[in-house]
Image 1 (spheres, rainbow, N blue to C red):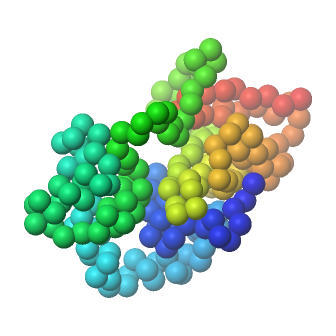
Image 2 (image 1 turned 90 degrees about the vertical axis):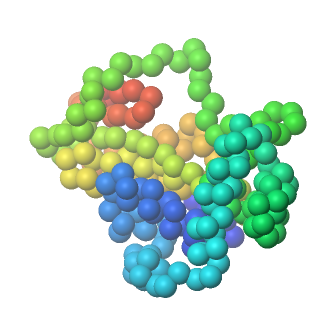
Image 3 (image 1 turned 120 degrees about the horizontal axis):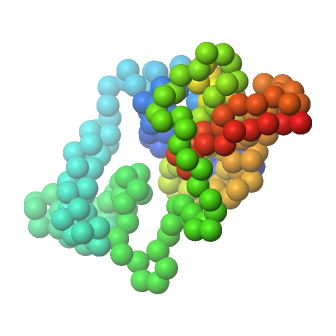
Length: 217
C-alpha cells in the first residue's frame, strides 16, 4: 500500500528518513526512489543555507529533549512550552508539538499509550547465527531487513526494505501508513520477484528479531 500524495512527508521529515537510512549504509538514490523524491533535490537541500526556521529548530530540539528527559518522559507539549518560557525561551506550543513529533517524543497520555511495535510473546525468536558478521561472498546469500518510521501531519509513515548484503542494493521496499504483517511480507515478495529467486533456492533473511533460513520449492 503506497501513500497518496496528501500523505507524503514534509521535506524536513523526508530528509530525516534519508539521513537515517544513509547512516545505515544505504545509498541515497534507492531511498529516494522508495520515497518518490529526487536525489538532486535532497543534495541541493543539504547544500542550501539553512533557513531561520531550521536554525531555530536546531536550537530548540536539544532543549526539548533535555526537558522531556528531566521529566522522566512525562511532560507533553504544554508543559515543555511552559518550561521553555520559564527559561526565557519564547516559543509557540504548536512549534513544540511539531518538534516533539519529529523527535518521536510524547508525554504521558491518559489511557492506552501509542505503541509503534507490538511483539507477539508466543512467537519463537530464532537464534542470531549471523553474529553481526554482515558479509557475503555472493549475491542473494544474505538479506537484511529493517523498517523505520516518521511522524507526519497525516499520521505515521513506515518504510520497510530488504538489502542484499553482497551488493548493498535495496532489493525490496514498501511505504505504507501501517505496520501490519503484510507490509513486511509485501517487501519480501517484491524482493523475491525482483531477484527472480528460483525454486529450491536458499538464503538467510535477517532482521533485528533474528534470522530465518529460507528455502523456496
